[in-house]
Length: 252
Image (cartoon, rainbow, N blue to C red; front, side, top):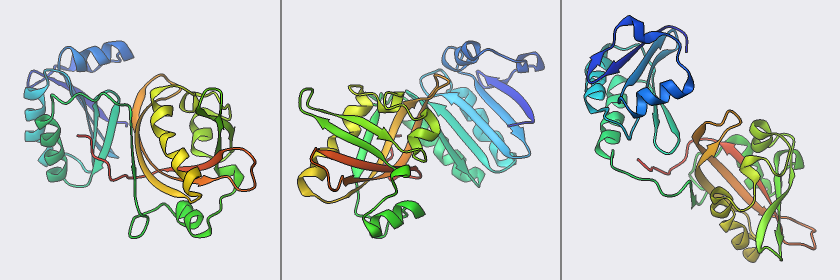
């Protein structure tokens, strides 16, 4: 976001010398060690950025005082085992969210992925997922195929569609970060695959996962997905279609 940038530390705005360019490590040190909050304002609104596990209470109380006059929308970005992001169209909504986060500042997230199954009736599915659920069919370019390996007793990514969400962020390799077998993310998100194969029916989920992006930064990514049994296959395969979207999973 282009525009004015400044830092608030210990409840006070730092002088202009603090606004210079910082390395990623120095910036994280300001968040984690100093409890600083970074404010950026510009034509696209106001960004507030901080780390939850830091001595940031006084600085956030100062932010709450100045937000009613801030340029809208207000983007909140805060770090808790990964970066969360949310956009609010009123100062009151943003202030309420900051207060909610402050109230749970002692929360420790021991998991890196959360999955919840929903009935799609009445839910706000992205258009592509709506069509796939109605047709019970998806174009291969949009899917990720996973196959069960008897020896390891785990599902492995076999093929990544060129238009799939994973391909857009990590490329076409079945061993890219999000598709690696054996990591915590893989174990949690693949638990539903066996249920789909047993039932022979598709399943609709909301997922919230802390994912390491190619720039080595961890973001909490919300997405909706449909898991379908792979038709006409003599092996235990599923096809997964996912789209980044709002989810009904609240961690903090």
